[in-house]
Amino acid sequence: SAVISQKPSRDICQRGTSLTIQCQVDSQVTMMFWYRQQPGQSLTLIATANQGSEATYESGFVIDKFPISRPNLTFSTLTVSNMSPEDSSIYLCSVRRGDTQYFGPGTRLTVL
Amino acid sequence: GESVGLHLPTLSVQEGDNSIINCAYSNSASDYFIWYKQESGKGPQFIIDIRSNMDKRQGQRVTVLLNKTVKHLSLQIAATQPGDSAVYFCAENIGGNTPLVFGKGTRLSVIA
Image (cartoon, rainbow over all chains, first blue to last red; front, side, top):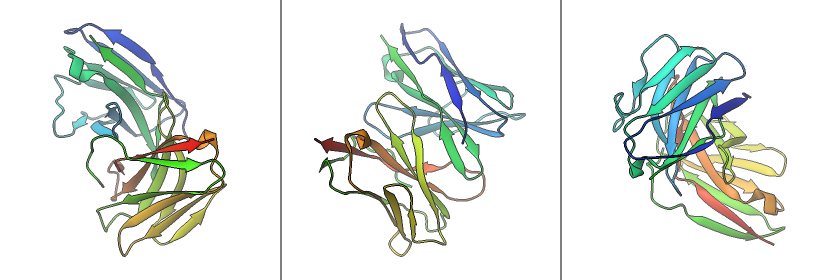
């Protein structure tokens, strides 16, 4: 398995501001993923962040809105830029170990 | 995998009864499947997995069944307890290092 922590666990932000979410893993992993989970819904993949390469974004998500950093094999950040109320969601970091993915506890974001 | 849907379907079960949660997957090439449990305010947690060369796998109080003919996956929980109340997601690995594809999820509500 993998032990994954995220900061902050929750935040309430004003429209137009940006929030950076941190993801820390207990050991080195190549593949990391960022997901969004809107209330009562399943997980939607935002991007894949592999160390040493640019993040790969899914359809509907762009780097200007969700810039990602992956400076080393145990850490990544996701920034939600120029936030609007529609960005209110849970943001989840995930890592792949073998064939399995493990998830962090999530960051609950509310945008007013 | 299934696309992100609207609100989650709910399964209500009496405490002590068995629960069966179903999932349909779409990619016949998927070779690995996982069930996750997501409790309120937490990230998804790995429960049990199964490879495509198997049709059944048992864990502690949980059993996963795989029917490749109809692309169907189920999770059986024996003697359901209040602590089993959560949202359950199936996920499939369509191959290589691609991220898992998640199903819509089912909310299990245990009635005491």
